[in-house]
Image (tube, rainbow, N blue to C red; front, top):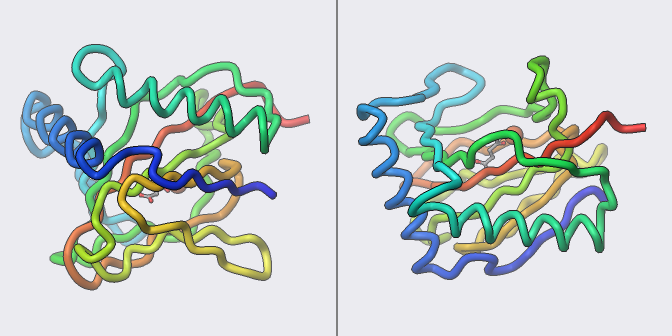
Amino acid sequence: MFTHSIPALFSKEEAREVIRLANEAQMAAGGLVGGLHHNIRRAEIAWLDDTGTAAWVMERVVSAVAQANREHFDFDITDFGERLQVATYDESNAGHYDWHSDIGDGPIARRRKLTIVVQLSEPAGYQGGELQINLGGAVWAAERGIGDATLFASFMLHRVAPVTFGRRNSLTCWCHGPHFR
Ligand SMILES: O=C(O)CCC(=O)C(=O)O
Ligand SMILES: [Fe+2]
């Protein structure tokens, strides 16, 4: 009920282009930006601007979220207050993200209501690295197809299992609004 899948929101070519844009953004920001290397999360992070060459990525995400919210969640979503995140989880350091909720303490993170994650890697290109959502009593694994999108309520516990082979890239966007009531 609090999860929803959209198969092939991006084509394979588009998924590759998103990774290329993320690499470009990372270079422009001076290379090693936003690597998170601790026990909870081990990943490289890049941020895409929602203007310029990456604007179409945000547009695609926003219209998918609008439709999914109308048809499935019916949350009070008012804005997209953060940039798009592209994450890289690599075999070399068992990239992963432990169980967490996306609702945090900060002024923006506390307004997160819906999270959308898009798979940017070919399923054959990595092992492990599943995006799993805890439904309370059952763990649900997101679709792995390249370009597939998964939406879930940002308060739900989720994780990325350690990558044991290859490399997984994902695109994440958070959608914001007033508190649940
Ligand atoms: O990379 C993913 O699949 C999930 C990322 C995530 O949970 C986050 O950035 O909060
Ligand atoms: Fe998350």
